[in-house]
Length: 562
Ligand SMILES: [Zn+2]
Image (cartoon, rainbow, N blue to C red; front, side, top):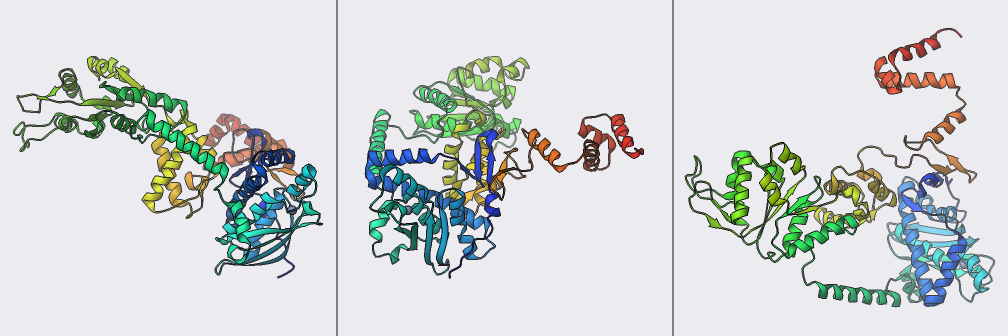
């Protein structure tokens, strides 16, 4: 069992990328930071002074635990094809790479199937012990709380059961090194002394919980209405929400404006639910989805014998929505004849079924929506101006997703819950890098597109694991064009630029480093363009941004003897 050797850590080093140009450091898809140990020391001291040594220890243990869990996910991903021990030591190796401590395995025995685990590791250069001794001098008990949290978190996630590590020696207490031992929690007779440091329940936690209860109570007193199913906190969202909220108390006709996929029906439904009509029906109809010759009978109903085929009398959507709200989506698609009838309904508050002589009183709030410029449609003669003015009393613009990017995490959270229930699947969440990619995307399809992407990601990500970039975007994506890894000597090293944006400098450096001459580079580039355009020289010239004769000249230059 002894003589455990670490495999080369190239695979782990290659996960680290520095993108100083964008203010980002990555460990695979986890965003990292280079933090001063002095800052950590300050935080530790503040915690101890403000919440006491036990709470400080609990908070730091949990902090370490969280990062251990993240690294265990990497271990499974990176070394899944290697022996269990080689996969396990990703933890100690990353703990070293991350600069926390030097780890030497003394004994390691693990088996995931049976859940057996025993680990004994020597720690040197412990960052926490250093910091503690510098601030407080020697301690009575071991102090490497964050690091022990890491070991427990890493191993528990790796073994899929709670493995508790204890620090049996610590340099802060005067030993030459720290030493940790880990076993399943059930096998420690004194586990109860240690497990509270891993639990979220605490005085601080309870205080926060009480405060949130007070907040909730206050909110429910302020407004005793069911919370509508609208999600967002960005200023663009809140602006639209406030307008809807104000309209809810009135009977005003509301016009929702916004691109396709921004969630106009959701807003219409929320308006209905927040209004005094909530107990009445909410009826939605998409004007673009109906054939023109059916739209009037759909909206206003039809009387038996009104036209061939009308064998029974039928209610229209207006009658169905009586006492409630009628949502007319894509109102810009309504044919002119139907527009005239709609205008009359709005003016008179009564409808007339097709082929009927009598009129029927109706009490309906109309919410219309469009993604086209109605004013332009009026100018073009496709939309009645009198109807436009009637509808445009209370316009509400729903912002596109690209203008409310800060809502993306909230939206994703609710989508993961919804799709999780739908597909009977649970994922841990979305990686930092994937979230960043989503925030950097233009979202032409808005929330609907986000929904599709998250649903796909949820299906592709392994059960209980994280949704990564590759689960979201169909093609290969490189969001960080310029980046640097760490080479074997520990120095920052350039990597091939993957994208075009911002990568020119790195590209130049790389070209210069290859030692290729300018003329050769030109020829390589031309050959590549010719190949890419399938041998078509005009196409190749276009790719290179030059004319066909210019390309010919450059090709000939090469052929002629120098
Ligand atoms: Zn220690």
